[in-house]
Structure formats: structure tokens, C-alpha cells
Image (tube, rainbow, N blue to C red; front, side, top):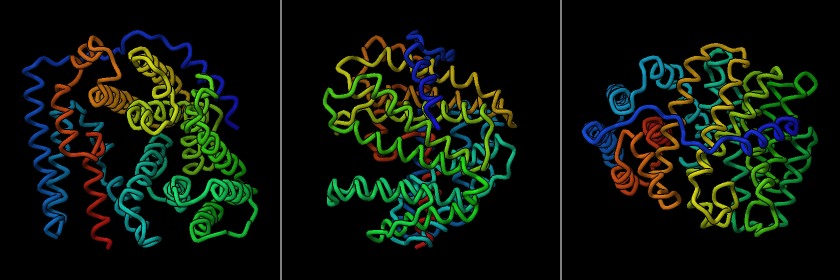
Length: 409
């Protein structure tokens, strides 16, 4: 299903230019200092919320409204998000969907950790964004819920060192059979839960009517299986093979998001979604380069012994190429979605450089710091102080989701 897109997007990345990213806005020291004060005020509001939870203070509706108002102020004055962008990011509908998802996940499995649920939430938000662009109501469907939870469960099983490699291969084969419409006997409670999530999808999308839904699920399963070769592969894989495995994993994931949201997609919609997912995967790999390198996980960034200046530039221009196909998507609110995508990705790249500056040349770090609303030393200090809460763009929703998780106990 994905091969026709994989070759195209791998070629896009290989042929992407290596010029500096075209981020026009620069910040002088006075502007950085002013924005750092705004961020410190916001961080203080986060601390108040966290301290309140530690002392079992009830995080009521008034507290929630105040926190989101502080968050909107920070995004507007500290990061220059527009009013229209903020309306999309913090709409009442998205807030309610998050609330419903966390509560439903806790009811579905009380043993799920907050980390698991928040990981699933992040996938749900991508699908909610696709609902906006497709002109569909922002809501949580049973298929979206099930698909969002599938990968915390499967990731936890695959990553569990107590489970042998042979047992993991048996699970991978059983999972493939279940996605393919067969009914293998589950070997344990984890498999039983995973198979039940597939059943939720089947209830909404009958296989005979929506074959592409299941083709997309099989594609992400195949890509996830292939990605296991990235671990301790030594020099067995070429750079092109590593690139294709990474692109396939990200592209297939968001393509499946689209099918779980809409049931059916046009060829143009498939094309954009695969590229969008590939870009998100590359950005994740940029941010995780230090962890991946330490774990022996090969990516386009962690698997080389050279500075990453050129590669992050190529990734930026790859993203620009992906966004060129967005108007072909044929949906709604394209301009707002495109502006939000570009704004978020620019900040994501800058933050990744700030947090992993040893992987870039000093000249490159200094140049990119000019485009950052905060000094890199400021970002690094705040990262250490608030780890593992990485990513300024996720902090607000993470706090809100954590409150829902706590209240659901």
C-alpha cells in the first residue's frame, strides 16, 4: 500500500537542498529577555498546578480556565501564535475530546500509566487535526480510541525485556493475523486486550466495506516490524535503507490515522498524509538523537558519525516539499492548518538544536539561536529543571490530561 509513496518521499529527502532553513524572524537579546520573563511566569503557573496536585488540591473548572488563559497568553506573547491558530489549538471541542479520551482509557484499563495514556493522546490529537482539515466534527470515535491505544500496548510488549525475542515474534505474527481478519487464540492478557481493540475498529468499519482501513493497519504493522532492524543493526543497513524504514514507519502511521478518521481517502489525501507522517517521524528522530544514539537505534541522525547541520537543513526543506501537496488535500481550513504546521515545526527544530547542541557545529548553533525566541542556555536550563516535560507546545495539554487522569483514579 505504501510502496508507491515511500520511493517518492525517500527521493524527496535525498534531493532536498542543504541550505539554511528559511526562518525569517530573528530575536535580539532584549526581545529574548522579555520572552524569557513571559516563559518564567508561565512556568510558575505550571508549578502552581503541579504543587496543587501534590497536595491533593482539586483542580476545578475555574483553575482550569485560568491555566488555559495563562497558556494562551504565553503562546501569543512568548511564541507569536496568532489568534486564529490559538482558537484551533485550544478549542472547547479539543479540550472535551481530551477529557473524554483520558476518562475512557482509565475505565478501559485502570493499569494504564499516565505516560501510556498521554502517548495515546498525542496520536488522538493528530487525528483531531485531520478531522478539522477534512471538515468533520471534532469527536472521539471508537476506532480513533482503539487505534490510539494500540501502540502503547504493542510498544510496551515489544519493549519489555522480560519477554523473549521468540515470544515477541510470535506476538508479531499473531497481531498480523488479527489485523488481517483472522482470529488467532491470544497467548496472554496483553494480546487479548490488543485483539479487543481491533474488534472495536471492525465494529465501526466492516472489513467488506472499508478494505483500505485494514490495508493501512497492516502497512503500519509491517513498518513497525521493519523498524526492529534499526536496533543494533551495526553496518548491515545502508543509509538509504535506514531512511526508508524511518519514513515508512512515520508515513504509514499517519496514513492509518487518516483512514481511521474518514474510512476512505482520495489518492491526493493518501499522498499528503504519508508525507506528513514521514516528516513528523524525522522530527521525532531529530529530537531523540541523543537517546537513540545511546540505545544503539539507527536513524538518519543517530546512525552517523558527523555533525547534523546539513541533515537538519535537508529535513526542513523536506517538510516544505510535503506542505506543497497540502492544497491537493481538498479539505477545509487549509491556510490555518498550514500556518500552524509551519510554526510548530520551526519551533520544534529550534528546540531540538538547543537541547542537543553538541550534535551541531558552533557556527550553526549560533546562527539558529538568532531565530529562537529564547536563548539556548535558557532552554537548556529549563529542560533540566522540568525534565521529562520536554516540548513547550505540549506542556499545557499534558497538565490538563494529567489532571483528568488523576481525577479518574
